[in-house]
Amino acid sequence: PEYISFFAVAIWTYVVTDTRLDLILTLLLISAIMFYKPISKLLNKVSYKSIILFCFAYIAIILLLGFLYLIIPHNPIINLANNLLSGRLNYEAHAISHYSIKPFGQFIYQPGNGAFYIDSIYFRIPLMYGIPMILIFIALLIALVKTLHVKPVFYLELCLLMFIISGGIDQHFFESCYNFILPALFATIPNKRRLKLGSEFYEN
Image (cartoon, rainbow, N blue to C red; front, side, top):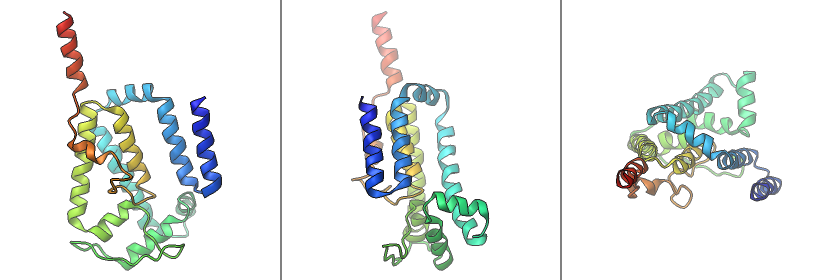
C-alpha cells in the first residue's frame, strides 16, 4: 500500500507542476526503494572505482550533449535529447557560447522565467565557480563514493547516485538543505563488514 501512495504522490506532483524530469527521477527513486535488496547485492559485487567511473561517464555525457547542441543543433538525435531534457540544452549551449571558463569563476546574469538559466550543476561549476570548485567537486565525489561503498552504506550511496543523476537537470548539489549526503563525508560511519566479523568472532 505504501508504494501505491508513493506513486500516487509522484503522479499528483507531476499533474500540479508539469515537471516531467522530476517525475522520472521520483519514479526512479521509488523503484530503487522497492528493489533495494537486489540493487544492494549488485553494488556489493562491483568496486567503488566502477561507481566513480559511472558517475564521471554520466557527467561527461551531459557536458558532451551541451557542446554537441552548440555545434550541431539541428541533429535529430541531439534534438531528441534536448526535448527529453525539456529544452535545457538551449540554455547550456547559450552559456558555453557566451561565457568561457575562468580560473575563479564569474557572475552570469540569469533572469530565469524562461529567459535564461543554467540548470545543470555540471555547467554551473566550470562556468560560474571556476577551477577550484571543479577540483573540490571531484574530490568530494570520489571521497563520498569510496566512503559509502567501502563501509558499506548502500542506501546512502544510492541517494548519492540520485543526486548525481539529478545534477544533469538541476543546480542544488552544493545546497545542504537539498543534498543531505554531503555531511556524510564527515560522519562516523561504522564499518558493517568489520562489525559482522567481530560478532562472528564473539559468537565463536
